[in-house]
Length: 170
Image (cartoon, rainbow, N blue to C red; front, side, top):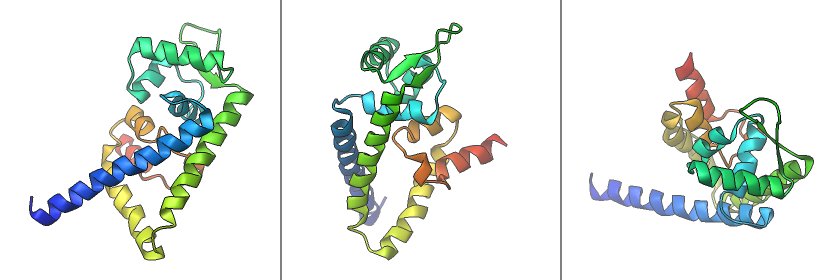
């Protein structure tokens, strides 16, 4: 790796941390609590009916951590667990839908402020760059959910992560 590549990699890492911090702050503010609550709400909103085991895998947390998280979500009145079957699928309540939508709106607003720093030409370059970085990571349905766990899928109809996974799956 030459100095120019090292510089680019270093800037990419710093940018990733910066954007991650901006997103976490926005989502935490909207949810009123930190940790994985916001990510969990958005993941369940995106894929209702999945189990707690699936959620833990997507968020990368242990089974006890997942149980605690689901309990907190339930106590807040944001998630309900089906009483049917052993898997007990998770679904957002109407209040959970409201909070998840507020978290996504806060995330979008924070990201919009960042995007406004770029010229139109820079924005046009950002889409294929992000697709080139993210697309190859879509090696399974769970990885797609992990990569997109804080995404507003409605604002990304041509999701490069999902499209890459779909092409691999066929």
